[in-house]
Figure 1 (tube, rainbow, N blue to C red):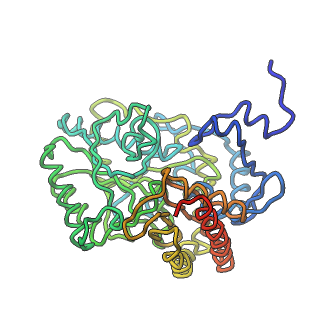
Figure 2 (tube, one colour):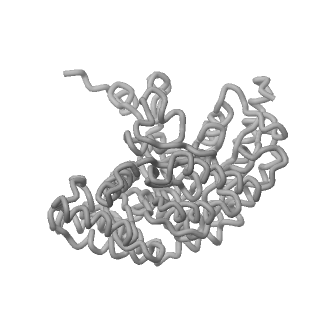
Figure 3 (cartoon, helix red, strand yellow):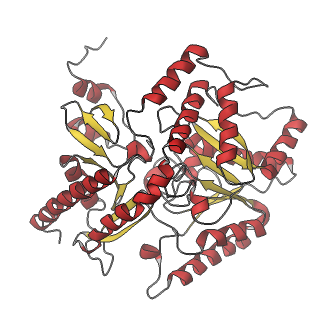
Length: 460
């Protein structure tokens, strides 16, 4: 047996493998060990306080110390710590949460399937689409359409839908039939002199041309985040989503809204699809569903999808898919209490009320020498670092400036995340005006330090 290291830091280096991490660099650098949370703040093992301005991983709506969720978990653990939902079994927490999600999501989305994560949920969406099309006698209707820089998870199938190079390279992905379309990011992807309306029209033409080239009879679904999150926080151009919905309906293609980051008020509306004026056939949610206090995700589908799946289960005798933890009673109990807190404290309204202060405050950095664009909606935003704003030239090496800014933010007691060239913000929905003011102040100090560093390194 290996001798146990004498500190958590050394033990982590010796034994832990971290996601989204350069493991060799981690052996040298080691972890930031977070020991406790209090509201929108967390504390490391040295006692240093940080504002957690990414809400963990875009997810902790109610903050890091909500005792009502701890109590809900404890009470459910005492009553029924686990049971499954296979073969006609059920329990009250999953029934009540499915009912609540049908109530909260857009009209027409009535049926819920639970998984443990957004990645599992999007994997399940793919299998649902294949299953229902086989049942309908359309075995060739299996392809998916997604977007470059979209993020839909990391399992083999959902990772194939994701449109980020680091999620594909050396993983042999994509491994399913998927076509990635142009990122709907006007500032970065528009042609010179192209208006936003013209940019939208070009993307919609690309979508329809791709469908016709592939054959509508071969395409099962289109998946997208209403606001793209992990690819760099890109808001859609004007008219984009209603146009996508119209084209998908025209060619009988399932429209999937990945609301894993957007859902439950993040954009200032209950769901991103409502913010941008479309109703999907399938809506996927996770993260803020339980504020990530427990792993849980939900797929909410309309009657057209449900009936096609249900009819095929009648032919085959079963729906041969599910997870041991699908609709876990403790996770569902926490989800119910979390949604109650969001509603009782009007946290979705809080995001809408604080949007002007948060977004306008970050947009004041638009003229900073290191910044190309500031973008966002509600309580989610991205600040893209650019060496030359006029030409949109990125710093070299790629991502170095955003990485440095994030490190300097941590020195200032602010946790944010670098996504390629972008510094991403997504604070808990419980933040106050004072919290937002402090986020902006700490970010400003970090940006001043970053500018000094860039000058000293000859990067400008």
